[in-house]
Length: 250
Image 1 (spheres, rainbow, N blue to C red):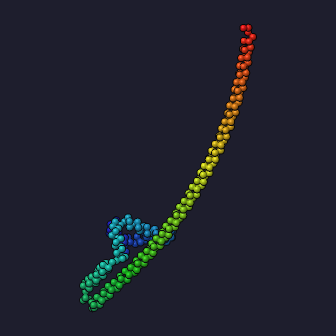
Image 2 (image 1 turned 90 degrees about the horizontal axis):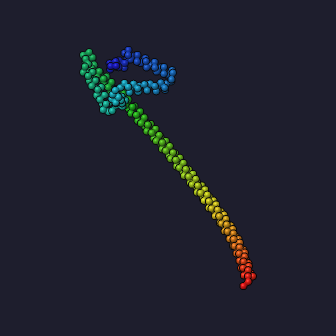
Image 3 (image 1 turned 60 degrees about the vertical axis):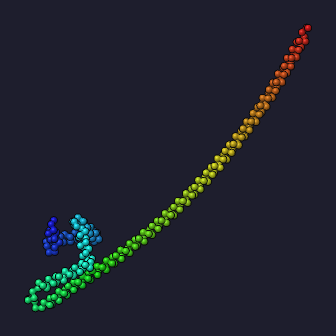
């Protein structure tokens, strides 16, 4: 689409501009009757943003131009005033004073128009500056409130984290104390079981030693009896042998 075609769509009084306005009005009406005002406004804003992103090539230049129109600088205001003055001068220089009986009145009217235009422009600039200052103050207040809320949230989270850490440490200390008590009880039980086992083993060893002593005593008595029997038998044998020798003749 050429620039001339686009200008026809944007120029008031052309068929293209009429069709464009009718289409926009139709879409806005359908949106208002179906989805409501705010949704329609958001949809229109998004459509305009999409048209700007996809249809404008030199976006930075267009944004700078819009910003300069809304918030003109002192140099731009002086340039506009100078353009108005130049326009008045050209109008006065190109005017045909032969047909006009009072050329001074024309200059006075032009000067009055320039003065009114300058006053209107100054009033608009003042209103824009006041609006900008108010918006800036509100934005700063909102950011301060948001920062305060963020600080409060961070402090609350820090306190909660500290409390949770203290509770976790206390729980771990209690668990460690319980583990130590359990270990001490188990060690005491093990020592007691070992002492009982040693005592039982000592008793069993004493009983076994006593049984061994008794067995040795019994064995000694049996050996003594056997020795006594053998001694008796030996004496008997010796006496028998002596008797036999005595019975034999010499």
